[in-house]
Length: 267
Image 1: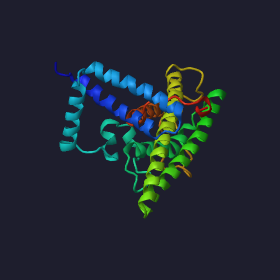
Image 2: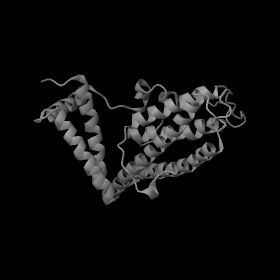
Image 3: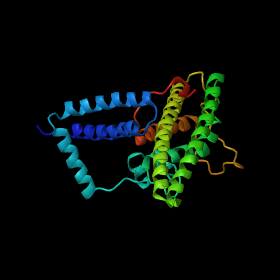
Image 4: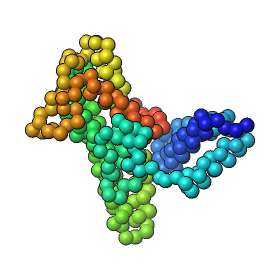
């Protein structure tokens, strides 16, 4: 029986997730994380088998890969806006000149936009004490992620400069581990702040008590942020755009959920 369009789409998505978990199993030095990834990978393979049993899934995925190789093209940052229009309103750039992993560059672009555009504007939204303190705590996590990105960028550029094959191999292994950790930590951060701003937006829409200036417009200090995207936009519109932006960023990265130790959780 032929696969439906929905089944084909699900198989392709499951294949992508399976490869991500395989990468974690291959590169992670954390035995607990490897075990969790193996459990999730088995669930994915069982689901693939249930959709298209008896090797039908392998046959379809092999055909899809061949079609993509023959007729398709690798997605680039320029393609982001096609499926993620809100995300595409922010600059999408490589984290370094030789960074060629799409997800890494998307995450780097999102973090840069969050620091340079969102953070100055969202700081103008007046929240109650508890939410204000939680919002401030996000910046410390962002700083940590920016340091990770800087180190990863240096590793990527060092690979290009390396002269010996063994040095290049060591640097590539280091890059793989750094990319994996950057995506895991960055994905956790985006999910955390997405939940936070979704709750703020829902409170604003319900005329709740947690936001004190829901009817105001964003006014960023023009001496510091003359071209801020949110300048003059309403608090409601800004919160709504923020939630949409984060939702699309998470969707574009399509990262697997890997539970972390309590000491590694975002606060």
